[in-house]
Image (cartoon, rainbow, N blue to C red; front, side, top):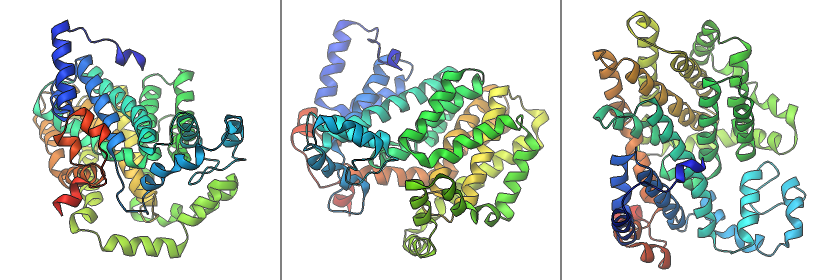
Length: 421
């Protein structure tokens, strides 16, 4: 990924103006960068702003958020001697708020704590990794053939809100999703390349909850990309999802340890009832997000299935399409299990919108494909609005109104959303 950070080929005076503008008003440069995605300097600016956003995030007084614990975690980790690093990696020494399955988070906390106990610096480092992965995803769109047209930007927007800037506040699962998307996309391009399979397995070190997704990729190729098996799985997930969901608690017993404990917690009836009760109190549009996204997905699946002779699909597009259906099926099966169904729906969005974009580029003169592509923003409108709400809920007003030095040197706990309310 380092080639993404090569020095941009622009004139010296242009580089000076760009740097000065970024220091004076980084948010403006961040917005303008999306109009020049093909330029390396634009992708660098997006990455830098992502890091600044990570440094700026705040949980306020909401102690229930993981973010709240991240911002305070280094104060305890900072006291551990460097010789304890092996104990931390093997789980013999447990850092507060983590466990033996959290290798990525635990290791990053330990390394950053060698230099500072400032939780905002830790979030900036997490954001650097997250930003690099997002930039690579943009690179994938560019390789497909990104153009500065309305449809391209709308599809990229829908892709991005699966785990946008707000995903930084949750650290592990959004980061693991972007890494998994990149690894799976590369595996679909070249299944014989071992390094991409290794990259996919490394996802489990970031978040073990993606084990099901990794297994699904393996099974997809073991079944020789059987389209009928994929459609059967989708039908079962819609009609009788409990056939599979009832067996999920048994899976934990095969792994034991931390994973078994987590599955038991997430599948406990009292926990599920409590979570569903909390969801019932959400704003109406939040509860409709998954339904709108799924409805759009079924329209795409129906069109591609019944009008396959009228469209062009290459091997990569076909693999993205079938694997999207698999992820949608997993989401359907686990939708009533907190921290599973919703998360896998967001992972599904990454693959769905990558497929829609490839479909659009392969059938650019097909008016129905054009209508399906541009209508994505309608079905994702609630998802987009909620993602922007989350972004404002974790960031302060200084991020959007101040210069770089004020953002870094004058931290605040007053989020934009709290000011709006």
